[in-house]
Image (cartoon, rainbow, N blue to C red; front, side, top):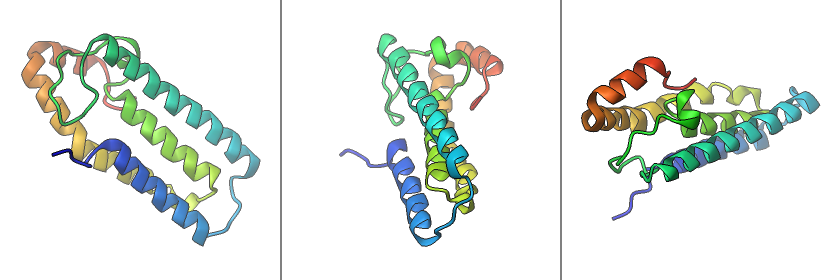
Length: 147
């Protein structure tokens, strides 16, 4: 049975909440500067995701969080963040908040990060530590979880 408990689903839910807030709260705070920052964050976030997916494909390991990794990927963007795809998700969420001009949605960003950490990252890191032992420990001491 396939589960819908996947990070893109959670991102979609949070984006939906931001969009609903934008519909209910018609304000202009960020304006053109917000739009420019949103575009930059969107490009950054999607680029980060793409680069991470490419590194994972090169290593021939899964991108699905509920599956065991067959390789510990520490190259490319994984030298900067242990979770570049999730960091990209955060950038996309921030971009939506700026684009739709919903400053009251900013607290959703740390809430999203906690959800992702608790639902995915903790279990992923435990699995990587078990599978790759010292290599994971060495990498995780050098590279921060987010940035």
